[in-house]
Length: 129
Image: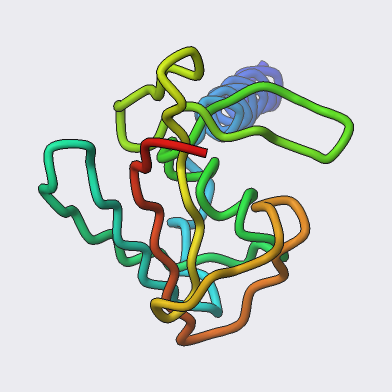
């Protein structure tokens, strides 16, 4: 009789532990990524906001989407960025987000930009084609 109770107690403990782990209590805390990027957003009103990202992402798009900084529409060339840090451009008013790297024009989109540790990018609200 004693053995049956111990088996039931052990089974109950094991089931409880499995439930806690499935709810995330057994997961290790998220460690910062191997790469650190700085992204400066220049809004339409001229204000700036700087983001420091720590990521293991391969592309700029992945890193920015991990932090919910950008959103847009899929196109044949990748993501067409329409919203950055909560501000959305109006295409009919010739507004768009200009991506630069270290202050220089960057001829690639966020999908095609592979990232490395220490890089700096800027997304600037721009008017006019």
